[in-house]
Image (cartoon, rainbow, N blue to C red; front, side, top):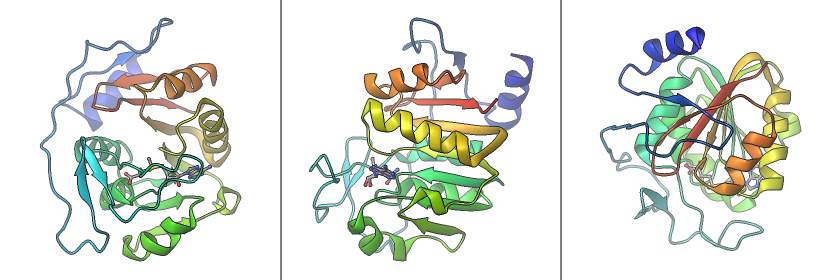
Length: 211
Ligand SMILES: C[S@@+](CC[C@H](N)C(=O)[O-])C[C@H]1O[C@@H](n2cnc3c(N)ncnc32)[C@H](O)[C@@H]1O
């Protein structure tokens, strides 16, 4: 817990976070407020507001789901970016590239993975220079320093994503999960055995360190 507090004071002085309990992530004990922002006007992809994040009207839908994908909200992406500042990072789920761009503003490098050909054709060209895109996670280098997981939101796939993130990230590396408020993601994080902390945001962020 001491190491955890030190980490928070350094990285996120305005955010309070609590440890996950056996009964799940607490829902009401944490308040996080970040300025909302806008994406740069020259972003090539056509994005519209969707809830707290964005969607692309031309998106044919996520493989396996058929529904248009939603990005992270900008405040959430900034929290993740701050946590991963200066690090070489793995991202699972490039999606619309919203989180990728904001993480890349502070990270040293972002290795971002998405299995969808539409993402490769429509999103990747617009990503910052300090990113590398992959459709196959096996091609991502080893000994990465941190990871952000926002892939397919099923229990089974999330467990696989956690295993992949643990495989590619070095001991002591930071693992961060979007959509921790979704029961499937929450359960996968709990069942993975990772000791995690929770930040209350619109979609919920969980994070912990690889043992
Ligand atoms: C919710 S979106 C990610 C949104 C993104 N973080 C953003 O802010 O724009 C989830 C993405 O995960 C991708 N995905 C689904 N299964 C995957 C897998 N096994 N590995 C990598 N990406 C996957 C989908 O194609 C989709 O683009």
